[in-house]
Length: 278
View 1 (cartoon, rainbow, N blue to C red):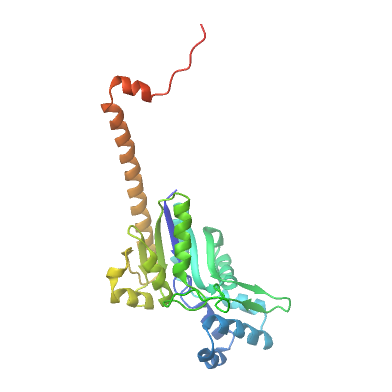
View 2: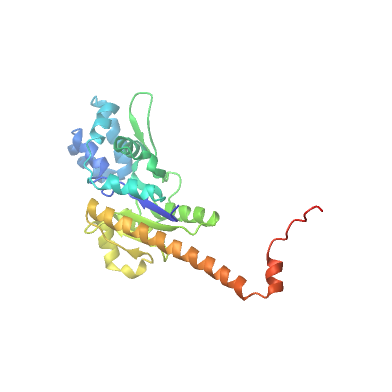
């Protein structure tokens, strides 16, 4: 299995639009959304919009049908399947919500490719209304990051993933793909040997370009799904080859140690033979 964790943003990375805007526009609530946007945080606004859509008679089925029509580059699904087949651990870190993401992934047939989805919680209540809540409940305690929106610091999520990998004794490399300003903070959390793939001419790319030296990971820009597939799979194959060469070198080194040991020491290092009954 490849020693690689690939972490995807969702909106404008896996799909080619912002899923929140797509649903609001598709269900005819754009004007109200724009009117309310200056008055509350985005995540709170999306919960309010789901309430408004429900009041207008829009159903969960209407939302699902809208989500099934989101545009996606034709090379994204093959890229995800290929990375999964190569043994990568695929995860999502997104400021969308569980319902939107899982509905789209299931429609595309790639839900099972992902071991973890980190996003804003959501559920359908007893009245059939979609409820959306913040990943970090900022009404109770702020996450303290000035780079991220109040409902989610992706950098904290990356730190949790890194701590989990470290606890398991894993030396896995991380490849992080994103497009938005919220993807800048997690990019800064990556370490040497990791890779970040910012989408070119999107907010995270602009932020990284202002001072690329503060990003410890290798930077690989991409423009569309074809670019993403080519660069991602090249990185996966390159990292896997390096790991394979490293393991081979370690085996050769151990073999050399045996060759230069004295005969007595070599005998001591070998397992003792079992006595054979006479």
